[in-house]
Image (cartoon, rainbow, N blue to C red; front, side, top):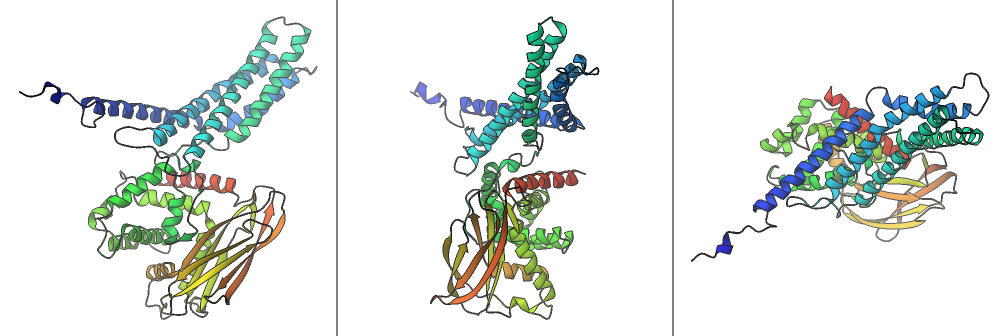
Length: 483
């Protein structure tokens, strides 16, 4: 006789009715929260509302302070109207912050039968903390405006007495100033506006390898938010059987990113770029690259490249110089046994800078070398990195090799370092960084010195400015593609 218990579903099984129902309920909840995020975010940035919030935030404390004077044109009705309008305009931004925090937590922390948390990826807590801080500032701003509105309304409608007639407008002016102060931090940018990569603008790279084996793809992956990084890993696994026999998913993506880089600069047309993609991907993968329904396609990869370039222009400056030498077939590529090139931001703030080093071995033999990086008054003051270099293949100067092949060879044969440097906040002025290349016996093969100027004010390539520029680059590219 069949055991009657054998037909009972397992509550935590993916195939059980309970498990599938739970997954559907979670999916509906996530979709509803994300729909709320998109709705309130669109309303927060709709038309002139961002400009109106700034203008009202600036005029609100002034209108309240004028009530304390004997000026003839200081009206309670004007101050009430300003604070009322400001309060109404702050409701969408508050709801956008609420739904953004819930949506981010769903994306990064939610566990169900089909996905796991992103705790293994760096940056999860930083993203959630930044959204939590933003929600707190939004609530403070809304409550300040609401209480100031009620304070002035009380003075206008009621006989509050001489003391309250002074204290309430004074408190309303102070609350308006608090609202304005928070607006400086909040109205500069609204997070999670992108539907393709909503968390990308909130992520800042923290942990990364010092040696970039595949410069473009390694740099891009380091700047992906945890959700996108997890999707990228899954995409790499899915590409295992979709690349040519002489390629791996990693090498094929690196080749495609080089072609995209040249296409962005106008050195490669779209047809040739697709030809390059077909050289490393099979037909099925190539079709997926032009399918806009896929998370990673040519358009989204171009968006991620723009985001990466805005974050780390230093590596792209090195590539541009290498590319220029390849176009001119100049002697700088092969004339010296060791070709060493460095890049550091000319000016930086917040005591941080990224140093990029690119080395080509033109000795025709593999060799082990060491980099000594000396940072004046900075940290680490001295670091030594040993690497094994392979000989660079000679670039023909008769123009027989095309640009894609030439740039691919040069980047494949290059040794690229990505190093973070830091200085105390009190340091100002120019600071040199010296990179010395030493051979196996400790002899000096090459040396270069670059300088960066430390400043207290935010500079073009400071972390804050780069994060803002990366976010705006993604938005501009997304809008141009939508058009």
